[in-house]
Length: 381
Ligand code: GLC
Image 1 (cartoon, rainbow, N blue to C red):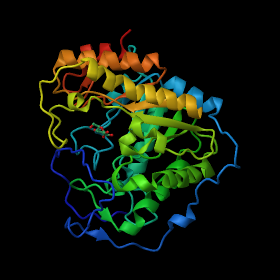
Image 2 (cartoon, protein in one colour):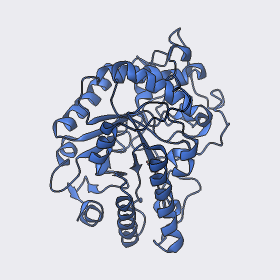
Image 3 (cartoon, rainbow, N blue to C red):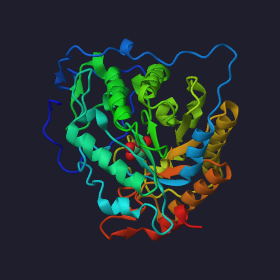
Image 4 (cartoon, rainbow, N blue to C red):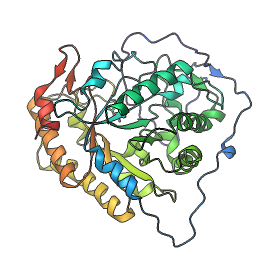
């Protein structure tokens, strides 16, 4: 069980996108954080990567991986819920009524479920997942699967892995165990969900960036090999470094495995989509319109790159996150959403809107109904 250093956060701490220059490390002492002493446990070498394919072999995606992505269609992220340091810290929990929305009245049957496992697992290399938290996530996944839903289960915001500053109420671990904990956690998740059907997909890590970048391809390969021990053919999702930016797809090396799926995130034009966002430094001014020619290009060219990557590699690609924050002017936001959605769909890229019921939310949790203009722009005809 994790020993926690900090008191639980006050309700709804400010959220930040923490930009750390590549190569910059986090000095635990400087943060005044209490690192947990490492106990002997598994080491990185205990999780070997996927063996390389013989030279000259071309591996392309299986039919099952392609079908899994084709089924995604127009999805939704259950964001700011289980990806907060503790569920509820950011003012939202996964509620039964959210699950009940899935598949109703033209709404999606595809949910991406971001989960901050790292803050619910022991601080040592074994990273034993808190049983109550594990059971909670399992129940949510099973409820969604029972509704015939495609579920993307991921690992989200393991801040220390990217070298980011931890959030309030998040504990730090010894640097030596940071990466191996991701592998130990995936071993447990994979074993626990091994019996579920093919509508459940695993996404190894959200938006790798910062100090993780030079290690990402190898760490992903180790994680994939770990998952494959218990899930030989489940679709596993991977995205490029730099927050899953399409511009960095050429740095992504896929291990030889046919059941892989590639994801990208696309918040361009960033100054528009993140205007007024409290967690972005420097803050982007509000009142910005969309979409002039330059903004259209910023929307379309990363999508073209993504579609080209799909053709070049022979692996399906989808957009795991995109959206515009609520402080953008509503009409501009609607134009942006329609334009983006149409561009993704023209290129055959399934997508997941960020997110259901918080600051980007398509659903108003207080009123208990969809924000109809947004709902229409995204999921309407
Ligand atoms: C990020 C994250 C998500 C965040 C969103 C908006 O890429 O994955 O947690 O809230 O984008 O900034």
